[in-house]
Image (cartoon, rainbow over all chains, first blue to last red; front, side):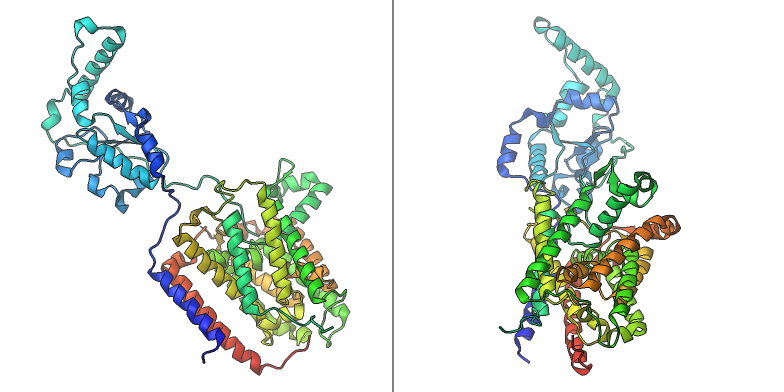
Length: 207
Length: 173
Length: 196
């Protein structure tokens, strides 16, 4: 019977069927404006220097999460202690979502240099994840500054520079002077505490 | 003047409008409708006024009086129910349905109706506390957001009513 | 993106204003649909008037479909809205008691307010009964505390419990609702009319 009621029911059923074919969306992660990203790109605060990373590692700071965005082979050849390998192409896959969907750890991305880790930073920031950082200079800078620090030229020596050098010398001892840079290390990856992002304030409701 | 008092809105249209109201409530305030919560507020406030100590020691009620202040949950529902009252008054006025009376089946006396209304209320009130809501807050709102609790409540309320309906049929039909 | 007040897009002072306006809409629609009459309401349990089922199901379906579309369009963040927590035992037993109260008293809290608003004395007394019932539960709470807290499954969704996606459940809900509408319309025609 083609009554008005029947037509409405068919329309509603079609709407419901349409919904079944639409992709599921999770709106709990806010998307970030490109302008915002452009602004943040130029801020120094999104960088961690190699010294800062070394310091946090030596102190075994649990809020640090190092993410190596290079390929698996490169990671196995050498990686920073406690770092997790998420190759650039896999960054957005669901498996690794939990690393980014929490407010607990500072996620510091690094690659061999800075270009790729910057790309990773932009991708992830665009989705809306917070607590994203890049290790400035990547592993190349790590080797130069931490593993094989150079003594500052005598003419330029000041207290600050000397302190930095001494720190780096000590750090290089700690990290093994880069001799193992080409050795495949068997490291126990430090467990990163993953907490699902929780809704900050509970909405009241009920009857 | 045509008697409009028996004219009712098409139930499907009413349901659609009610659903839209629910949608807007969720969109604006993040929550659905409710009714029994407001009545609970009345009880707690009155009880608190009589004996603050008793309320503070009561496991259930003490959560609703935080530092002598009303918890926000209570105010939302109380204001919503006041709105319900006003809305119904407006509708009743428009349709000429205002009449002070005791509505009952002609087969029973008004006295019987009153007794059953009170007993029914006590039972329902008790049930809303155990069931964490009533047909509006637990069942309707719960179903709208597709919470499992909403569907369990709805099935329990209507299921229970259908089972017990037989025993009270004399009052209605 | 909604929900607007919890997300800070509208200031919290508006919350009570919105509650009041939503309430007015709620009360107006209910009374317009005839929910201010106990004899009309219990018709769903005796087969002579299925208005409760029609309004209820249509409202839930409208809101559920609407929310799912809003979510798809990015207009609402579904993880920021209130989801009723599931306590299986108390929901079933409390619900059954409410069902009993419904057929004995002829109202539920929301409809009793509507009926009282237009002058029904039995509704006003029903509300009085509710107050008493709530009080009774409160003072005897220790007896029921275990039952009240039993089987806490958390704020789970019905489609998760049934192992399907949100949209598929909504579709099934629509089909069930429409089937119910068609069947009950036929039943209503066969039952003796009640004049109220």
